[in-house]
Image 1: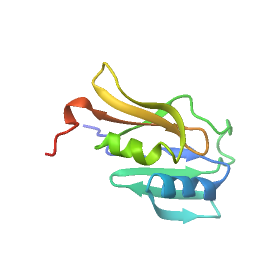
Image 2: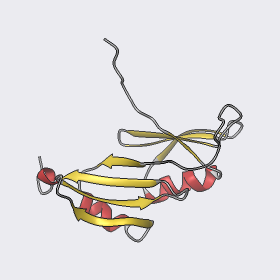
Image 3: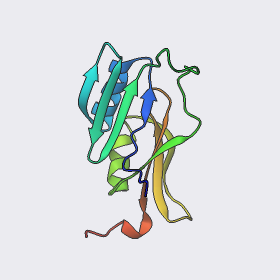
Length: 127
């Protein structure tokens, strides 16, 4: 049986240094690898991996942007909100939604929407 084992998005950016800085300083990611010749970098936080790249000659649509959002499941979403609400541009403030998630969203330095959520059932559990 074919299995998918990981998902590591590549986010396009026009400014690699600025984007590495945002993900490192604001969100606490660690730079794992970088290649300036390729204008590429790999970052990690806990079990989340992302890659950053300037568009190259192989891509035909080279505009920076994404028609959706990136959703991060986290623990202690309220604590994360307190940390990020003054460090990033807010898309929407923290709220508990009818589908059982407490979440909020910010924009990164490229305008990508980053959502952070925690199941309401998990909030307050210390297990």
